Structure formats: C-alpha cells, structure tokens
Length: 296
Image 1 (tube, rainbow, N blue to C red):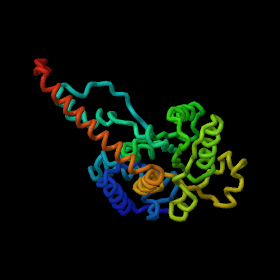
Image 2 (image 1 turned 90 degrees about the vertical axis):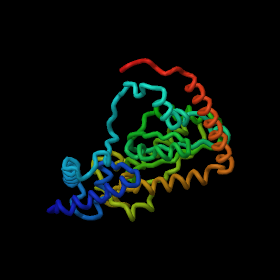
Image 3 (image 1 turned 45 degrees about the vertical axis):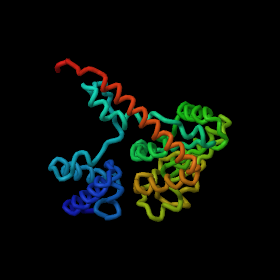
Image 4 (image 1 turned 60 degrees about the vertical axis):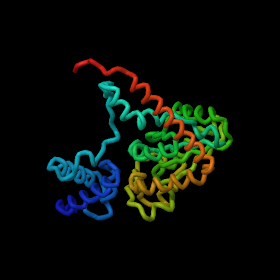
C-alpha cells in the first residue's frame, strides 16, 4: 500500500489540532487509531511506524506543537523546589493543595466507586473526571497482580459499604475480557461485595470501531476463549480506538446513575465553603510574615 505523505500529514495535523484545542493531548497510538478510518496507511506495525515518523517530522518542522502530543508510558522523579517565595506558593495553593481539603463524599453515600483501566494512556485522559467525581483511577497495565487487587480491596473494606462498583475500561479481545474476569474472581476471593461493570469496550461498540488484528499467539484462544475466533474472526477492538469524549460521557452517566446527586451537591457545597475559609485564613497568616531578605 503506497502512502500519500502529504495527505497523511494534513489529516494528522487536523486530528491533533482538533483535540488539542479541546484540551486533549493525544498519544501516538491514539492518533494512529483516529486516522485509521481514512485508509491512508496499512493498519499494522508498518502503518504505525509511518504515522510516528510523519508526526515527528511535523513537530520538528514546527507544524505541530510539541505539547500537543504526550507520552504517558514514561515518567521522571523531580524533587527540585518549585517556589522561591510565599506569594508564588499561594498562587497555586488553591488548585494544588486545597483540592485535598474537604469531606470525603464516599463516607456519606453508602456507596463506593472506582475506575479500573487496562492501560496507562487511558487513565491519564481520565484525570479531570477523577477530580470531578473524586474517584480513584487504577491503571492495571494488563493483568493486574493480586497485590494490586488487594490494595483496592482494602480501600473498599475501609468504607464498609454493601454497595461497591468498579467501572472497568478495557480492550474487547481475549485478554481484555479475561482481565475483567480475573478482576472479578480476585474480588470474590476476598469475599467483598463489589460489582465489576464494563463501561468500554462493549460488544455493541465493535460495529463502529476500527479493529486491530487478532494475535494468534494469545494463549487464551486455547482456553476459555477458544470460540472467540469463530464469533469475531481475526479482529480485536482496543480501548484506544474510542473517542476520549465518549469515555468521559459514558463514565459521567454511570456516576450520575449511581450517586445520590442531591446529597453529593450538599457535600460539594460544604467543601467549597471550607476551602474558602481555609484560604482566607492562610492569606491572613501570609500577610503577617515579614518579607524575605534571601537573595538568589
């Protein structure tokens, strides 16, 4: 398949620009999936390499902002102080620290909800939603360890509710389906009442999503999912192919259905008043501190 690089570049730039203007920073893999329906490259490793090379060239040429694309598979440790004056700290205090001040709504709702995600890249996209609903997001990075599940079980047990829900986001393939089963099995082992509810990818999604080729080496094809190929052919559907806005909307609806919104709003109002009082108190304390004589 011959690739029209000029047309591909134009398509990739539009996709990245549209999402970036809405506040989304896509990964290379997300761009690969979003552009696939245009049929400008083979949907395989070679096509992925073409997309990565084209995007890199565009970024090096200044056609795509460097910040418009993110790499969520790597991180760094940064202990360097960020504030050299109290005033600078106060500027960020409300958003950075004040978000931790307030009443925990899950203590009052007779309900506890978490989001578990198969992939790191999706978990990063959902951070704004985590802050909106004050919920924990758990990227399992494939099959999660029993230790990781146990940490989640401890959180659930700590609340002592009978009604607990894990909203699960994962691929629709033998591994993604089995990861969900494994999670439910692990929860049952610890004798905790908790529903694992798949929000995406669902079977009804596969009609509208770009499929990926099935990995014939997947060992689950010889076990519990031996009939997968008969039912779905040589195709799998990855969570990366879903629109981030769609994921937000789905999860929002799940929370709205699960949560007593009237009680939720009362708790959020109490938190708002508490933070306003705390900020006013801190500002009075800061105003009483003499100016620093330290020179850089």
